[in-house]
Image: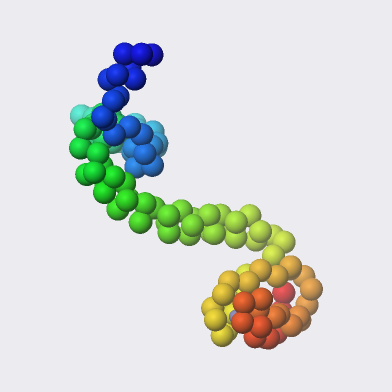
Length: 130
Ligand SMILES: [Zn+2]
């Protein structure tokens, strides 16, 4: 382990973008396995090679900038995806509305008939059928 510590000294190491590239190669290889075209599967190695190049890179400030740019897109995308996922899970038991005033997403239980909904954010009231 000592040689590895020495080897990694002054090198960038693992960050979120590297992990993303690593995880990207897996579904990519699965998709490309179904497409029968010579050498196409080599594309799978592109994110993997990029991942290792970044981890062992000595240009730390440049790698940090790349990761920062990646995270600027990644966090909103992840938040949106998690929102869709939780909505999908609650589809049977809840209904989703947007507040007519502030557009805040609201979740109400299904099957309660006509109810008055109060927005927790702006306190606006409106009625909906659930
Ligand atoms: Zn509101």
